[in-house]
Image 1 (cartoon, rainbow, N blue to C red):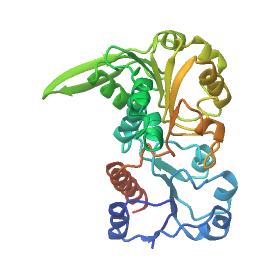
Image 2: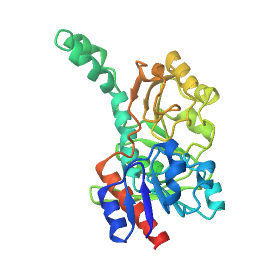
Image 3: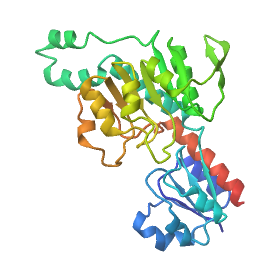
Image 4: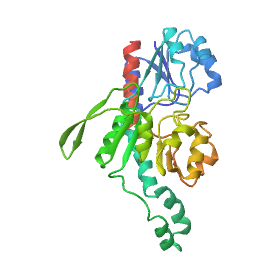
Amino acid sequence: MVKVLVNDGMHLKGIELLKTAGFEVDTVNIPQDQLPEKLPSYNAICVRSATKVRTELIDQCPNLKVIGRGGVGLDNIDVDYAKSKGIAVVNTPSASSVSVAELAFGHLFSVARFLYKSNQHMPAEGHNEFKSLKKSYAKGFELSGKTLGIIGGGRIGQETAKIALGVGMKVLFVDPFVKNISFELNIHNHTIPVSITPVPMEEMLNQADVITLHIPFTGSAVLNSKEFDQMKDGAILINASRGGTVNEDALLEALDSGKVAAAGIDVYENEPKPRMDLLAHPNVSCSPHIGASTKEAQEKVGIELANQLIELLS
């Protein structure tokens, strides 16, 4: 019987699909330090971002046939080494695209109208300082007419572009591996074909009022001090991609100087313990890496991942 370890959780529908296919499924989390002892008895492991499947662990698991990642990023898995050992590595790149794009815009709406600040101050000061707070937070801005720069033209970047166009923004995107992005935008039951050609990074940085990242982490940040210097004064930064894609020291300098007016951040270099000076910055709207954490996305992820495992292991 095929044995599958679901170590970081999976939607019940995905688990039911695996069991219906005749697989033995264990859903009790095994701590990272115990995996070398216990994982060798399994044929497949399903993880999210918490569990790491590195070279050393792979070498200790001769029965492992498939590593499944519920989500987009694969930076917690040594993919090339696994494949060199004949182990398939699969993920679910499309299942959470809408959820991540919507969270990115959730942060953008929040910083555009100071919701993250007023939500903190209203309970403490709103009763006695209502007029003062109203004046303080009356300098927000509309998204319509602004330019959104998207770093990454994949599925999530395209879903983000759809929302941006829907609220009247102009879209620029940067991706050295994508020649153009094409999709259909549905507005009031009318389908509008859209095609967007990428621009150079510097051009986007110079023109964008808001910049959002939707790329994997490849070992180094794509936004450093040089890139922040090229941005428009008072730009907004949104990062719901992966920790490490933005140099956090450079971001804090840009926030302190006002080069970046505000940032919405869902991912961090040092998860699960992000740096406090970033979390507590007065111009940062933050969330705890919940981009894909919606009911709809989790169901899609579970079903998509289960179907891939069934196809590979049956």
